Amino acid sequence: MTSRDIVRVASAQGFWGDSLDAPRRQVDGGTVDYLMLDYLAEVTMSILQKQKERDPKMGYARDFVGAVESVLPAVAERGVRIIANAGGVNPAACGAAVRDVLDKHDAGAVKIGIVTGDDLLPRLDELLDAGHELRNMDTGESLFAVRERVLSANAYLGSGPIVEALAGDARIVITGRSTDTALTMAPLRFEFGWRDGDWDLLAAGIIAGHIIECGAQCSGGNCLYDWREIPNLADVGYPIVEGRADGTFVVTKHPNTGGRVSVQSVAEQLLYEMGDPRSYITPDVTADFTTIQLEGAGENRVRVHGIKGRPATDKLKVSIAYRSGFKAVGTLVYAWPDALEKAQLADRVLRQRLERLGLKFDRILTEFVGANATHGPLSPAAGDLPEVQLRVGVRSGDRAMVERFTREIAPLVLNGPPSVTGFAGGRPKVEEIVAYWPALIDKNVIQPRVEVA
Amino acid sequence: MRVRLVDIAHARSGDKGDTANVGVLALKPEWYPLLARELTRERVAAHFKRMIDGDVERFEVPNLHGLNFLLHGALDGGGTMSLKTDAQGKVYSTALLRLELDVPDAEAKRLGLPGAA
Image 1 (cartoon, one colour):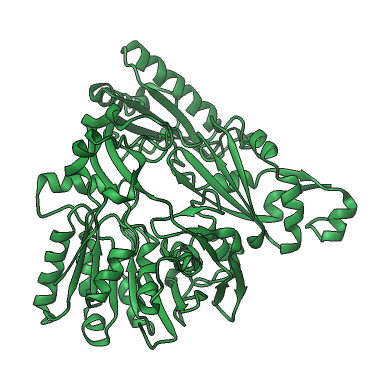
Image 2 (cartoon, chains in turn orange, blue):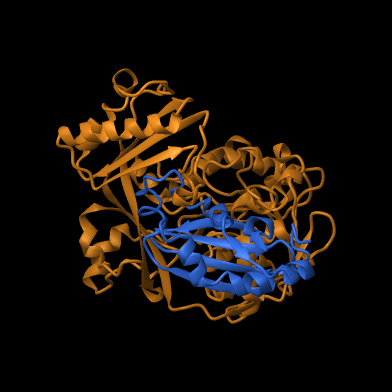
């Protein structure tokens, strides 16, 4: 347990593809104890699995290696620790790549902790045979329906194995599929000695994690409240949780950074991707979002307290990805006058041609960007718009059908309605659809493993 | 008087599979009871009737002066399946804010709603 009153956990990556400078800016901008980097969205694991199939040394978030290098002096000299779910489907390979970087910079003494045990792909048939049906949480279907097309299957692990790695003096902890929130809760739990059964404290750590797991989305990014007045987004500060042993915490950001941490920016993030706010279920605890109290505590500081939790369930969520056909989206831009009418005519012409070609799709979707793409039938009647983008997407199990569709967009420029442009990007790309299958599994069949070296 | 939700609330939305969630928050704490009373499940379901295939669920989050709505069947299959521009439901938030409420003039005045005389 720590002698520190306050433990600072800094968010430095909200998804794979987030700002490359964020980790370095978080360690340069002021005091932090932990850097938390979240790389894994729902379908990221399947992309990584495909990469690993091509090259057994791949299958992790490669950006992470550069992130570690960019903050290495802080890790080696100031004792800042890093926790990331960058391991994807190959935490060992990720660890080896980070080890190379440490050696290159004479930081060989820095210990790396690797958390595994989330990857169920090698055990999938064994689990199904043993009666774990991994039914789809949304549709109730058994996984047997798509078994042959499964690309990846990972259980969401909680804070336990990360805490164990920290206790083993790991300075960099790399996990596969951990919950995003555990990456923040684990260091608070480790430092303050929170135990199983400390439901309110564990719930507070999870909610701290929920607030900062999407990076700047709680510190001024994507904030609708008073958005015009949010200062200097170009230099937006990523969020920092200042945690205390009693489970209260402050959300803030470094001084002299842009963006804004306010009760409203934090409240917006709290409801992001929320289901039943009374039951936010994690492997560690069930957190009750209706108990959260927010109060302003100075400029860019929001104090969070009052949080209650209940015991976790005896299940873990499993994220499964499977191949589910192909899709492509084509776009063209039509100009004034009568831009919308021209785009509508082009859509009719295109559909007649697809039909004449005998192409069958599971789905064709047309949107008129500028008129109705985001708000659909709620959009007000458009006047004579300066331009409209026709956007047509198709989906099919038959790649050849989707391929043929992509050849029918460009011809419309010369043989369809007039005043059309915006086709410079070339033919639409055919994409394989990797679909998401959420399921539950009994906790007791999952054994997380921790190695620190 | 007629009050636009966008003038009394802010919102954020996200996705879980084929479900979009919209969290809507009163711009001022004292406007929350009005939101909680007027923004019923039925009201929101009717608003999105032609945009979603499934049901609407509603949850109250009074401590944040907000409500959370789950819009099922909102994302054309969701995530990677979806052909929609808004495949992840990021702007269902502002689609909800298009809703307009009828508020008695006296109440609108008492609450200091924008546009109340």
